[in-house]
Length: 259
Ligand SMILES: [Fe+2]
Ligand SMILES: [Fe+2]
Image (cartoon, rainbow, N blue to C red; front, side, top):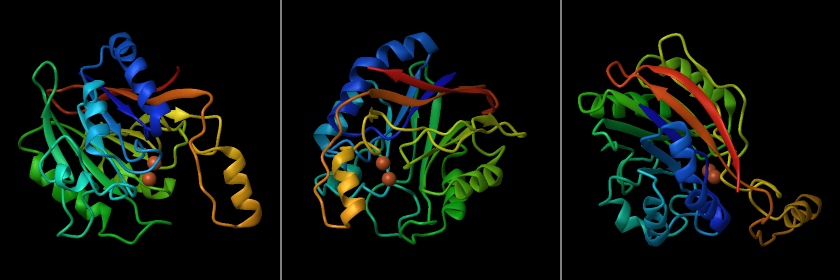
């Protein structure tokens, strides 16, 4: 089976890229299941129930997230009742929502998805490595195919997780930096890996925001309102080909498609 993983979807331009480009990418790559990181869909920060619905209607099967998940508090009730929307598994116990899920693909294959968040140059949450093992234990009897979204800043932490979980999951794809890396590979025991899937949104800015405002902030260190950038809208991510009998990945291919 082929799974498309979409990197951080940023604001209205990102949502438009998904709505308009996803059907063609699915068809061209024979994709039957789509995972998208939706932590930035609400004006660049957070996700609301209505915007989650928009992504699901556009063809995304599971929405993952990251450090911006609690920015729009309307999502809290929804995240507690909808297994198609994940928050990182390694938030402390008591946080609402789920860190993993199992959802059926178009052809009836059970697909497990796990969402983690890194700790290097980020908030100090629970250990993502141990949380990954716990979530795998919870879902491995229900799904042979398992994809992990590792939402993290440091490439070292993502690569280390890749080696740690090689052979236990089908793919580990990084998110959060909004910059696609070119290190895609299938690890020796059959886990596809990519340090960062990139961004789905406007590339004519600084990780989705207007470059003039970000520059002013760097130059003056004054608080600044950051608006969405507008130009060079792309959908970025990766297509992973997985043997659904064994859960091992055959190939991983990066995607960058201009709107
Ligand atoms: Fe993001
Ligand atoms: Fe993030």
